Image (cartoon, rainbow, N blue to C red; front, side, top):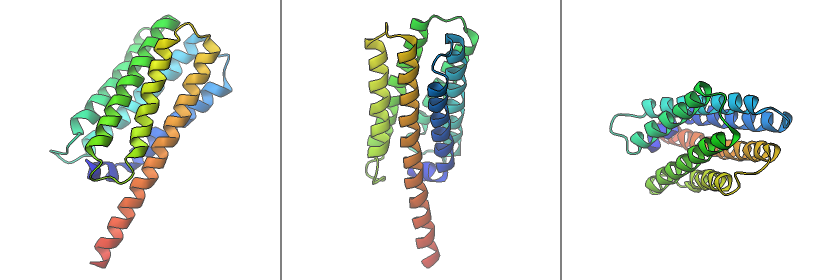
Amino acid sequence: MLDALQRGWRFLVLRGVCAVIFGILAFVWPGATLGALVILFGAYALVNGALTLALAFRAPQGTPGKGMLIFLGLLGIAAGILTFIYPGITALSLLAVIAWWAILTGIFEIAVAVKLRQQLTNEWLLILSGVLSVAFGVLLIARPGAGALSVIWLIGAYALLFGIMLLALAVRLKGAVSATSGARRLA
């Protein structure tokens, strides 16, 4: 699994960049209608799911945790597709989809980090992004009556922080790849 993450660090960068862009757009257009939020979330979930699946398919056969990555990718794609199929969804339903997607994503990220703790020295970045996802989802479930502007800002802040965590993890993994490549050249 670590080898797959190291080889696929570029996909983590893409996921992180997509999350940061999504977060910035949520802040730049705070008065956006629910329809615009549906489109933004649907696009983000679809791209994030596709990139997670790409990372899973790059992993060598038999890699531990590959099934979790595939599940996360399919979950993201399903959330994105459902969002586009039902654009007239109510704000409360959209919040429930986003909340459960964030909670499940966070749980699986924490599980992957725990599974890799023996192989990855900075697994806390993945654990922190997972905890952030779970906390965000629980907050949305606990406060469903929050105003649309508050929800947009929460989603934007979540996406920014999540994206930054993924970018930090990608930089760490790229560094590990560089160190490994350098060690192989010296041997």
